[in-house]
Amino acid sequence: MVSGKSISIDDRLAQIVSVLFHPLLMTVYGLMIIFSTPSLYGYLPLQVKKVVSFIVITDNLIIPLILIVYFRFRNIISGWTIGSRSERVVPLITISLFYVFTVYLIYKFHIPFFIKSFIICSAVLAVAVTIINFWFKISVHSAGVGAMTALVMILSIKMQISLTWLMIIVILVSGLVMSSRLWLKAHTPTEVWTGFFLGLIGSLLILGKN
Image (tube, rainbow, N blue to C red; front, side):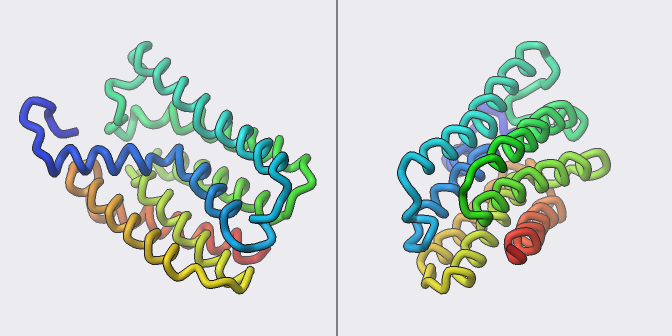
């Protein structure tokens, strides 16, 4: 992490990008994309969207954030960015369990299987990142934007709708996020690209066959 005593504008912008596109926000952003596209999923009843969003925001965002605060004050992690690979073990395992629990809850709802597949995909990636972290400090940020890129690609193909501008935005955001992680020296290029391709290829395989 860059020292706060001599932080530059570029450092601050990279930090802001890392926060705005934090891995915990990726599933929420993904749902927003699915529910807002001019496709079958965009016309689901508002109540269904609210319930699914509530579950995902609670299990995949709010509770993990509370746990990170708890881990910090119990000195299980030494900083909010959790830069050490060894320190990421407990948070990643705990968060993965909540992602899997989200799958269990969502599977009971009568909603399009593609949405369930997206939730499953998020959980699978969370577990995969957790396992890989035992040997290699993969970039979770990059895995998240890789998954978002795959989501837009699959939505466009499956629903036969033009999402060109959204695709451009997602690609630009991916580049921005990956560059920010490198700028902050949070990861090496190998860690960043490995994360991106894990998210991209993993999501294409899971979402593409449903």
